[in-house]
Image 1: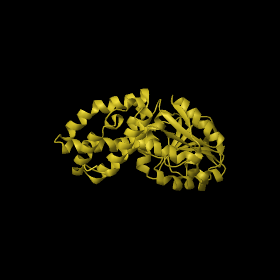
Image 2 (image 1 turned 90 degrees about the vertical axis):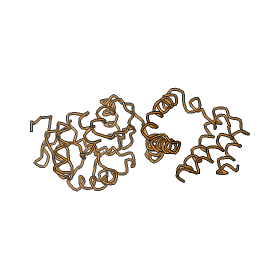
Image 3 (image 1 turned 135 degrees about the vertical axis):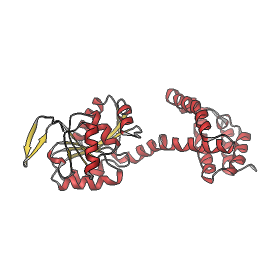
Length: 303
């Protein structure tokens, strides 16, 4: 493998890079960020085969173990599965990592996920791309210009901001104490969007439309709605029976939904009740809003 060289210092018989990044992790996020943020001195993982594969994707000269990674960088991005963060952070601390800056990329946990490294004398934080990354290749395309939430110690935050700038992204500072609220918002905007479309596909199939045809048919309205929300906000983007206070249509929907999965009926009701708040802000009169709530909470055509 072709070797690259960076300014270094000697530490405990290891070569430590002053400027290059060490990547802890071998998954799609680790690969994508590693490829976008050269120079990378080393990539570390539990499995030698996957670590070497990630190193090839990134272009890193070294594939190493977590225990070895502290010898090759003073700036480490920890991009592993959420439940693996404690073990990897502990492994790096046990390997003697100190005086370094470490950011993890998980949305599920705030800076405190790296407390074991912080206690060992490292500056720690979180840098989460507010973007879906289904594959490393797709991540290389979508991560530049994305929004990145960050929090942590002063040095970690400085490094996070510098990485966001290198990626051409937008920074979003988050209060560490409110990090779970931020993550829940991201889940609703991304994961639950998938759930809403899947529920719509279920109802289309009940209507006799194939799933493939339904997905194609829904494409324009999904894209247009998302565009309207982002351009004008939820209040101006909202249309439909709840915005109009059309309780007759809502009753018919609830009756029809008796043929759907119970979870889909519950989702329609819960989403409808939450939509009333948007409709109120958009101008739905209080009386009409109350009528909609009564119909939704009555659960059916007998309302």
